[in-house]
Length: 276
Image (tube, one colour):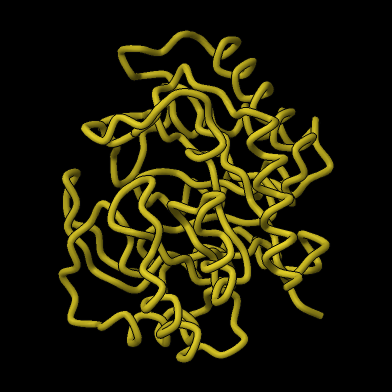
C-alpha cells in the first residue's frame, strides 16, 4: 500500500508547518510556555482548517546551525511530544538546518511519522556553512535507532542554498529515489517562492509516480498549476497573518499566527484542483 496514504489517509496531502518561536539558547527565547501556546494555536488553526498533516520546525532559530545544540533537541522533543498528544494528525519534524539525526531521534521519541531533510543527496553552500548530502549516513542512522517506519521527505536543489555538486535537478531526483527517499520536495529559491513549473514537470517525468511535494510558495493563485505535477504541498507562510518582508530570511515574523480562514480557503482550492 502507498506509504503516503497509510500515514496521511490520502495520497495527496496538505502538510501545514508549525514554525516554533526562538528556542532555548537564542536571545529572543520567551520560555517554553509561550512557545507552546503559540504552537498550539497554530495547530488548532491547521487542524480545524482541514490539513492532512503537521510539521514542527525550529524556523525562528536564527542564525541556524547545520547541526543543532542539545538544548534545541530537548526543547523540540518536549514540544513535539506535547503536540503529538493533542492531535490525531500525523506529525513530522524538520530540524534546521540539516540535523537529520536530531529529527529522526525526536520523531522516534515523540511519535512523529516523518521528517524533512533539506540536504539528502546534494552538496550545497548556505550562509551557515557548507552542507553535504549524506544519504547513506541518514539511512544508517535511521536503522541504528530502529526508526524504519519514519518516512524521509527530502529536498533536492533546496532553497536558500547554492548547489556545489554537479548533479542536475534530474540527477538529484533519481539519486534521491535510489538512496531511500520516501518523497521528493521541490522549492523555489527563497521562502515564499514557488518552484518553477518546468522544474516540477522535469522531476515528474524523471521519477514517474514517485511522490513529489511542493515545499515553498504554494498559495491560492498557483495551487492549480502546482498540483498538475505535485502530489502534495507543504505550507506555512501563505497561511499566516501579516505581510511579507522579503528582506528577512523568515518573511513573516514570529508573532504572526496561522489564520484558520486562510487554511480553509486553501484546502478548498486544493481539493478543487486535484479533482479537476
